[in-house]
Image (cartoon, rainbow, N blue to C red; front, side):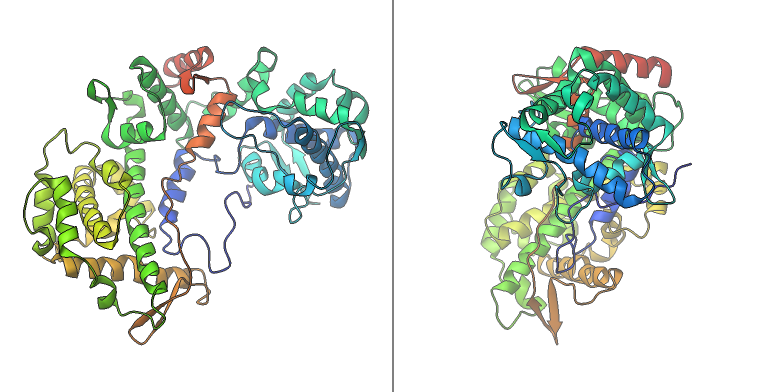
Length: 530
């Protein structure tokens, strides 16, 4: 088995200690490695993978590099040739923005096609292997298409060579391939035509079915009935959800998907519709429900932490914990809670147990999508945040009681025991159920934000990398933070489904394509036996 070594495939860390001050990301990271293995936020389009595998194969077959620097230069020339042509072409795509790598470098050197270009330059100043090294290499290696030999030179696996042969056939009539591949100086017109041959969206045309079928095999494990990860199931869930939306004339998007996974329901013009995914996908859907529960927990704890930092930033001398939570307006807290729960009582004086009882009295269907509604409301001030935060925690406790006795939940709890996720809060629930709102807010901030921040600093082995410091009993601001909403690579997954022509875009909506229907039928009959 080829050894996989990780490469940076996410945003780089910032100087003050990283993007994740509380390490709330780790649960999601580990779940994604199981649910959508090898799909990361920066590996944008399948065609770029195809091109890079062709470039690696072309170097291997035509140059037989013996030293790493020789490979590096040869790869750079081929990747930069595509980049220059793409910069000249400025192509469009049906799925969002077209990623053109190296624009900061090329804007000073690439202007018009009626001249020659030297393609021996770095696309990204800090990465010798350009966009491939920065964004794609880890995924391509994870998928088993490449390996690194004892000299550090990247080689194609037997699997990767299959893709290389497909691309050679695709390229066989293009001028760049025939006369200029590997050459430093290439005419602009040749490069522009080469970019046309490699446009992201043309992978979906009639000439590139072999390329699409290759990726279907990779991403859906079509040659293996039993696999250790859940990527195939997750992508099949996408196909089912898209078909359910198409059938009901509902636009498919990430919110709709999330509601199906969390509530097993979608909203339509005719009301709320219950959605039952195929029984063969039940286990994976359950893990996605846990993932979505963490989305809400992570978001609201992070938002509380951000408001805490904002309060500290406005005080030159820092603040004590009591001072941070003392500025709540009971009137605003009660009004914002009443807007949701519809009971004219003094919510601020309630214990958490009593507040939870009020939340649980909300009748269905009003209770469906309530977490989503609360998370979508623009927060006006800290008192508004407090109100929504505690209602969310009550709703999540309801969800927790629904799922925590399941054996699948126990499996995740056992495997991710060291991660910070909603399980930790609900283990403490009995000890805090009699806390009133002020005490509960103080406890939440101290236990689930401040202490977690300190623990994260120790985990990073660098006590200087922090968002706040403490002097005596006073907390002092160091850096801002930003909450991250559902990092589940939804856009990347949709891009891949489009690239494989499993879905298409019609009038802005995602629609199942004929190849998607064929693959879905194949999966049900040959993999899932339904």
